[in-house]
Image 1 (spheres, rainbow over the protein chains, first blue to last red):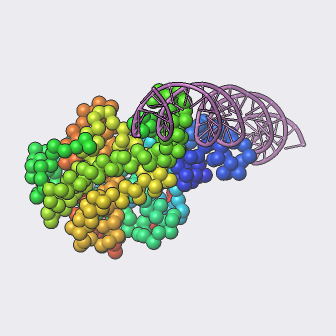
Image 2 (cartoon, rainbow over the protein chains, first blue to last red; image 1 turned 45 degrees about the horizontal axis):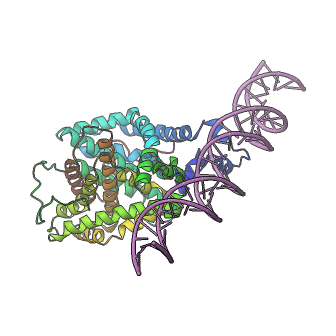
Image 3 (cartoon, rainbow over the protein chains, first blue to last red; image 1 turned 45 degrees about the vertical axis):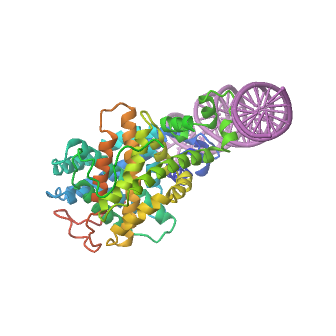
Length: 213
Length: 213
DNA sequence: CTATAAATCAGTCGATTGACTTAATTGGCG
DNA sequence: CGCCAATTAAGTCAATCGACTGATTTATAG
């Protein structure tokens, strides 16, 4: 699973066959993936399930010391810190985040894995608690911002992982977490513009009536 | 190119071969992709380049009526509305956004396409203008939030496209744009927490010293 | 109408892939 | 020690892949 994850992250899901994974772990035989997992799909699911389990365990610890208070930030921290801390614990280089980002965007794998990931108990508690702090938002806006937050956590994690792997002297994981929490708090608590005002776009000209080449 | 994009979006870059693309457009022969583009990489680049050009044209129109004022929202609208309006103009169903999201996460294609996309002149102007409205932010934070914004635009576009294609009665493109602008304004203008305060995490317990199973 | 270029068709080639079968090896347990 | 199940090795198989070739059709310009 580690070898598969690494190859996937390095060369893309597209370019890695089951055989190369078997060869990468030193087995002359090529049936390894098929034998142990059944196929590519099940392998990907197994990898993601393992990570999901570990991260949810960290979420549990994050909630254990009493749930966050009434403010949004506390809940956002419970949402952001466990996965990023998990990634940090993997050392450098790691490949999980970049692998996960690829899986998310694949139409087949994304649906499969996404549902399992959202079923994690502690994650549900956090999303639930966070949602209650945001019940002043219209439901579609709340839902939309929720998916934005999920996307950002994985995207930022993948980007930071890539930066570290390429020895880019960027931020630390701690700084990344901090920055992401700040950004998500801003995103989630942003004011909602009523959908009727299409005219009030500052000093610009008519905002409509132009598209399709 | 349209057929390739559709197949990629539906089944994933992983599952679509050059042959299937040739067959999908009714050609008995399978050399179409190879003949016209050279290979998969060049095909992807061609598709993305076409979209990038169209979107940048819309950006140009968005900037033509005089650049936005001093506020962040005007610049964010210039960043968000052109790509989403372009997607809206493609009708339902469309596949560009989901295809683009996949390309972005692939290690090889993402680097290739990302650089070309960032080189669009009008996009550079917008990012430049937006950056000037945010010069109170520490450079790493500004840069980080910039990539978050880019990620969100494509992710939200892909999600909306998917919802429409599956006939999910969600929002309209206009509402999506509005919501994304609101969220991005909140994200970009969020307060920055100084990186030293690791203790002040509301009512939670010690925020460190737990990870790695 | 024709010359030229572009595009499509038809078929082949070697390489690769995943699925499969069968034998050898390993390690745990009584 | 010997048995047994799990794993690995070794090799086969049909299917598919991308690249290549050459003939034919189509589009375009003069």
